[in-house]
Image (cartoon, rainbow, N blue to C red; front, side, top):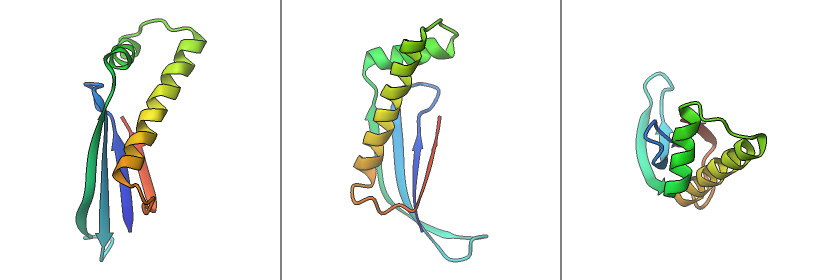
Length: 94
């Protein structure tokens, strides 16, 4: 099974993506790293993410724009890491 994992950590510097192949017994799977990429956020977006985490007051429109921007960077990282869209499961958090 091919699994794509996406994550942005507390540094809010960007999105990291990993594509791995898992085989064998689900209790003790063997895995192989197939690809990995990092997609950096621009400074303005990184600042907004940090401000959101610190309780900065955003308007509804600003929250929507922020969510859309983060989603776009996750999508970019996913496509760069798995350009043939072969993953069967995607995990995204951060």
